[in-house]
Length: 91
Length: 223
Image 1 (cartoon, each protein chain N blue to C red):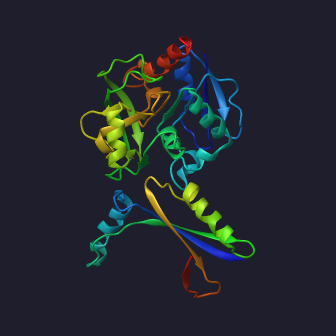
Image 2 (image 1 turned 45 degrees about the vertical axis):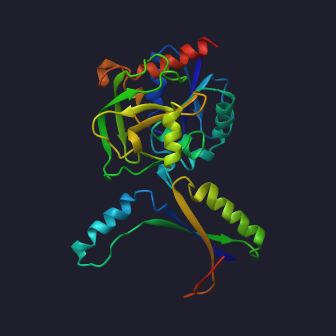
């Protein structure tokens, strides 16, 4: 089993009201020095068997057709390494 | 004439849409999201609501419902399709209409009687209006901001594909005050305001929305 992570973010030119709301709350909590917040989505997919290039291509296709809307969002795909406290590598 | 009204899990306004069809003189046919069968309807309405709880993105999961396969194929053949609010979001997700709907710029849900101007009275759903007509139609949404890239917006305006525009204060941050658009040939229309709630003087701001439903019946009768 391999975990593949898909991160989806609104394109930079699309207004992100949720990120703005989070950013607006920061001064009230005493945080300063943060100039902007953008909110996105993270999907963790458990892929059965060996992660082949073909499987990875399927995940990218899934990310493009369902997990993100290419009109307003960008996505990135990476493979999460197994085990607790694991790092990550680009895919 | 039979007009299908689709019910997805989480649709809210399917009953009102069916009633609007009947008041306009048509026969409303209930279509179920899980059936890949359009039951011989002549046109389709995708109603408002919160299909699949707006999970993932508004309309993103409904767009892959079994009924949508036939609707997308039908729309490409020229079958009139109207998407209202969540239905508009579904049409954009299905790429039957360009652009997308995002969270209102001011982050609040809007619910108001909205003034609109009809910019295109030649679509399958707007022939009973006159270009320039100013109408009042209920608007209620949390994610109704219409966005598209500049080139797409220029094309929509240049080709007359903007169907209705917001008058007065922009209620949700939609680019260029766009409230509704159509495809190149005019059979597919999507809009955020709810014409199906404006078909009866008793319970709404008037009957300015009825024209969407009488228009398509007239267009179908003339075919």
